[in-house]
Structures are given as structure tokens and as C-alpha cells.
Image (cartoon, rainbow, N blue to C red; front, side, top):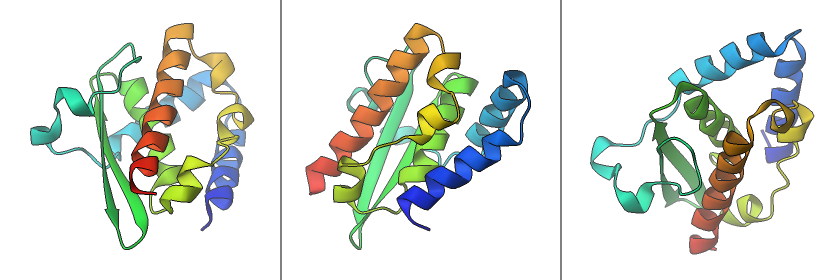
Length: 136
């Protein structure tokens, strides 16, 4: 599945829910399936700055593709980083670096987050793209 196809699939999944409480519950469920970062890597250099909660992100580059692992101490935040990982995992770093993650607006996520969570989301995207740029 391409990066674009993954985004369209998420938009379609979220269109099945009638209200945002159901969408939040779904985001929380996604966080439970998050590829977890190893506890030994929950260090300051893996912490995403700009997030209201603690969010740690680690990445691997293998066979030309990126794999991300993360954790957070907040369930909504864990689900949000899980959504990003769902889209960006197993993609080429150059595709990640230049990606337009339109699914965020496509599902209405920005408009349903508090300003601090919205800033945190932007920080997560930036950190993931920076990880990809390191290996480009």
C-alpha cells in the first residue's frame, strides 16, 4: 500500500464514525496497537519537544525503508502518534520527508484538538520527517 493509499484508507475508516467521541475512542484503540519503543530508549534524545505529554519516538532504517516505534504517557497522544506511524511506517525516507499528510485535515483531527495537542501533533510530524531526513 502506498503512502497515499494508507492516508485514503484512514480517511475512509474515520468516515464510518458519526461523532467525534467515537473517533476519539477509535484513536485510543489505535494507540493500544502502537509499535512500542523499547523502555531503554525512553531517553531525553527520543522525547518529542513541543508536546503537552511525554512522547518518545525511535526509528530504524533498514532495506531502504523507515520503521517507527513510539510511546506516550497520554492515551489520546499515543493514538495520534499511532496514526502517524500507520501512515509513515515502511516508507522510503525521501517520501516521508516530502509527504503531505493530508489525512490529518481529511479526518478533521486538527479542528478537534486543543491548541496544545495540535502543536504536539505538528511536533510529532516534524520529528518523524527529521528522522527521515537523517538517512536521506
